[in-house]
Length: 347
Image (cartoon, rainbow, N blue to C red; front, side):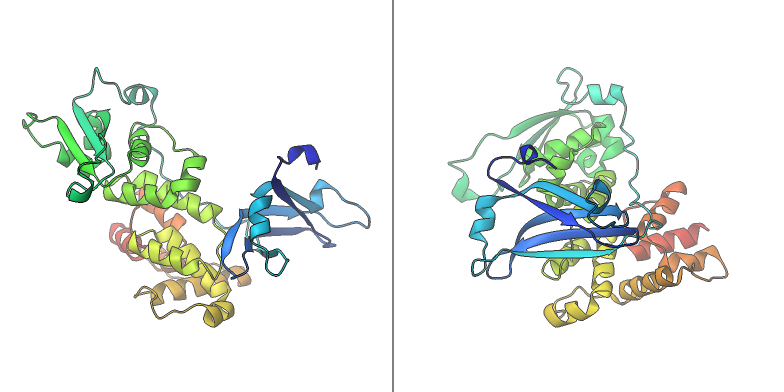
């Protein structure tokens, strides 16, 4: 830890563990303004702390988080002169599987070299962020952003985009127009279609926009990868859990819904006290019971007893369901119920 690692105008956090036994935890923190609204924080992290020995400060029992917020932001968020930081932690379960992310089928240098290649492209995509029928903005309308693409690649990677190109011999108009879409986010989608990876920096700033567009254009691999990023990087709180739950339900993000349900079950008393459940999405009973069963199994260290594999699907985590579905060549972008039904039918 060195002051030189901290940028000017930025603040850092040091967390020190005094547990006398090794401790493996998942933790996160956030800070709030004087209204209790969360205005910043760090992503969830995992740390294996070593046993604390008197007067022994080492990397084994210290977490150093430099440049986590601007000092000016913190000063504006003081509550009666005090900075309120909420710290959350829970035991990390090393047996919990990593989120399943399907491999990008276009990950090939030949395909990547064709991205935006005007000479070989046979489709022009014009992307305009404005509504096509927004008369009030017609005078101030900006020119659409042009993307060059290939019909055969869209056919394999995005059915909605391919269908917009026309079918059969209908190639008289090789230009398609897409409105009400951010050209910058569409570029991320198209780059993924051509085998490139979307950076974590862009995902951090535009994750839900990327999921919305990937869902709209049927690019399920990008949708699932971005969903896994949200689950990995989000510190769930009673203030934000319902927003995530509604988004997960609306966009059919099974992994994100599972993570929100795990949080709700693990923090049920606080959620009941502070969160209104009147506007919660319907049909959550099966998700709640699955989260409860997973928690009980984790505490007991037991697998789910069953007579056959089909019965075990009921309490499997979404990542495991997706992995099994992918291995059988099934669609992995669907709700828990859809995944379980497809797996049972294929058994």
